[in-house]
Amino acid sequence: MSGHGHGHSHGGGGCDDHDHITEAEKAAAYSLFLKIDTERVECLNEAVDGSGKDVFKPWDKRLDKEKFVESDADEELLFNIPFTGNVKLKGIIVIGGGEETHPNLMRIYKNRPHMTFDTCGAEPDQKFELHPDPTGALEYSTKVARFNSVEHLSIHFPSNFGADNTKVYYIGLRGDFTEAHRHEVTICNYEARANPSDHKTNLMDSVNHQIS
Image (cartoon, rainbow, N blue to C red; front, side, top):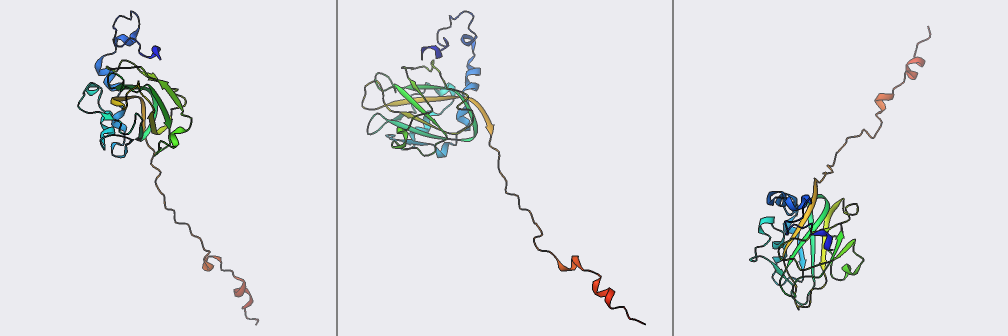
């Protein structure tokens, strides 16, 4: 995945426009965390309850070491991430822990809510070999056509670089967001029964004429 860094941290890429992206542009690009339904985020095997939500934070807080998630029983972590609308997911950045605690593999699944470690044995929609990335310089680009209508994203880190536990400080998501279309229930009053008074005939009237 060495082609996904675009030289963000090098600054000597010559004609590569990616080298000149400002911090403000980067912050705007990685603002999808604002579209996550944070209260419904699930992180399985987190050592501290609720800490999995803390890794979805602003770009300028990506290097903040105060908030992070660490795995508990083994090196696996599984995030279930619901969005508040539809996302076209284009890229992911992962900042993990130092030494061997950084995840070395990422498997992502589209629109499979409430996945467990049992169900994430299924073939992922895409998977990436990860590299240690302490500053968020590497972006892993998704197959956009496959991730163009994402309401729920699951991210599975099955292993790391050799430690007993995995540590993640930041997960950045880049893409486009569309508000969910609410399907309002429309109640229509249909006149289901025929009203006999609407169908009177003049038949009886015609036979009641007196014959003089």
